[in-house]
Amino acid sequence: MRGRLRALAGTLASVPITLFGLVLVTFFIGRVMPVDPVLAIVGDRATQDVVEQTRLELGLDRSLPVQFLIYLGKLAHGDLGRSVMTSHTVVADISRFFPATMELATAAILIAVLIGVPLGVLAAVKQGTRIDHTIRVICLAGHSIPIFVLALLTLLVFYATLGIAPGPGRQDVVFEDMVPAVTNLLTVDALIAGDWGAFRDALAHLAQPAGVLAYFSMAYIARMTRAFMLDALSGEFIITARAKGLPAARVIWRHAFGNIAVRLVTVLALTYAGLLEGAVVTETVFSWPGLGQYLTVSLLNADMNAVLGATLVVGVTYLGFNLLADVLYRLLDPRVR
Image (tube, rainbow, N blue to C red; front, side):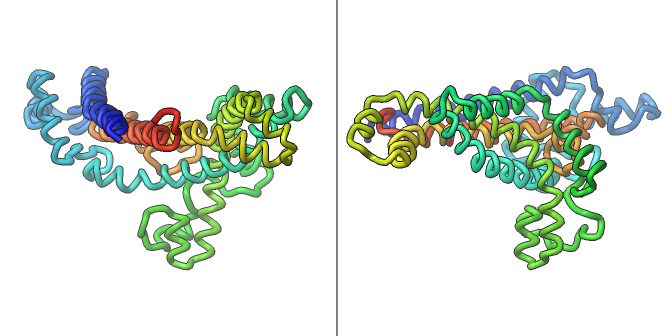
């Protein structure tokens, strides 16, 4: 128990250091970018006096270390500044846009797991056969095709050509503001409200971007599952189980898959974190009003408070899931304990 607590304490102790490094790097990258946040606020036609006065009010006339200390002080009170683009606080904007990204990433990881894990197991069991080669080619394509190309092809085929899928966006205009926001997860809120028309519409809009992200994640999950299973199936305990005459399904799913489940949990946690922070391109192509699109539009409009805030949230999210994966690995795997 002391060893577990010591290891957990060491892991938790690294979190503040990592967070400080993340804030430091994020802040200074935002300051050295060739974008003047003052001009983004007052406009290009503002007089020099107005520009200087605004720079003075924002504290941008001070040295970078002083600006960083001021930023840390505001950050400690949960203040990420105010967005120039929306005129709202960055915290309010993130709380409004992040649930859409979470909904998209959650749908994608569920699809990826339900398809990727069985495919990986099947490829390992059928190693060297046509089934194995076919699955490996599918996974290779998922990693090779740029995600924005796959997103555009999906829109072109299913929306523009076949007309069987809705267009970009999160919902049709007719359903806007029809569902009361409880969780800000549109499909969940529609179910809570009992509005089946809005639920079907939200699900239809979710299908294409979630499918694109799911294919990309499924390829990685299937490859990792196959590699883990091949390692497990070559173990002596599998040979012993087969020598005892146990059914093949039990050997594969209970003994081999049970042995890799812990490592697979770590992979899934990090994949989900990657979806939460890496859906920028997909959200832009599908006009999905999530954190990725918010970050992209803010960057194009030189809204540095929004860019820094969104980047910080993405980094903290990834760090949190990385920490969760590490803790789960320690808790579930007796060999690590």
